[in-house]
Length: 108
View 1 (cartoon, one colour):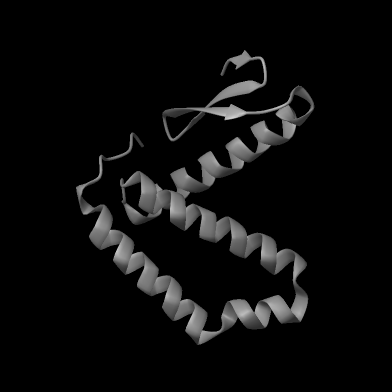
View 2: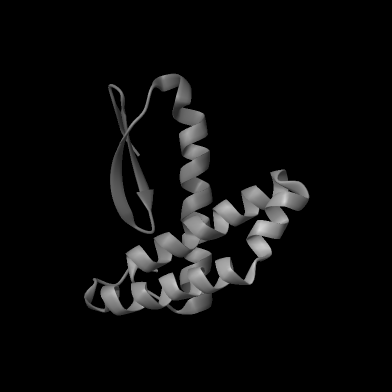
């Protein structure tokens, strides 16, 4: 990972990304990169899915769910547990599978 000015080069799932980042935000960004990378690798291994965009969306949903569950109390738990929301998430996953079938596999 290199650092040039206000940019930081990071790797997630073997792919490099250049992210705008002030020096004081670097530790938090590196922690976020580690969290996202580990969550994506976990999901890719569990699901045997190698489509980067699908894995990224599922990782984002998992991370958001974990954070909302930690902070939201009963109200968030009720919203997150709603059958309508679960159905919508499953529907999005099915649509992603259809759209992303031709995407390049990840290096796991």
